[in-house]
Image 1 (spheres, rainbow, N blue to C red):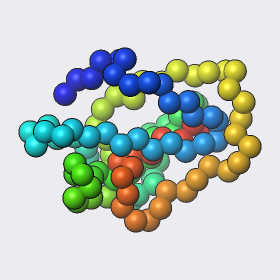
Image 2 (tube, rainbow, N blue to C red; image 1 turned 120 degrees about the vertical axis):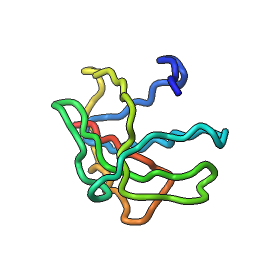
Image 3 (tube, helix red, strand yellow; image 1 turned 135 degrees about the vertical axis):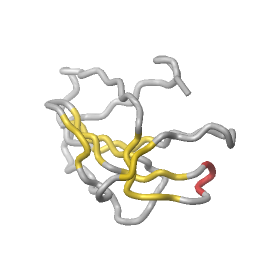
Length: 107
């Protein structure tokens, strides 16, 4: 399923913060695409702006979870140079499955 660029409001993430996103479909014929990962919280890919971590795949309404998983999609982001650095440390992904299929960490 292709979602338009304006399908959701922007989510500000300050440098040093970790942000998870729950992406779901309510129809049984629409499945999120993902790849098996190596370990929950491992860095899948990164650049100078963002770190993409392995996360959890959860069925609609949280009936079943699989981890580690890597979201197969495109992440669009904009770098806001006016946003100050976070004053608290980034969170660490939990070892238990949760509703967070993948975790993004701004650097």
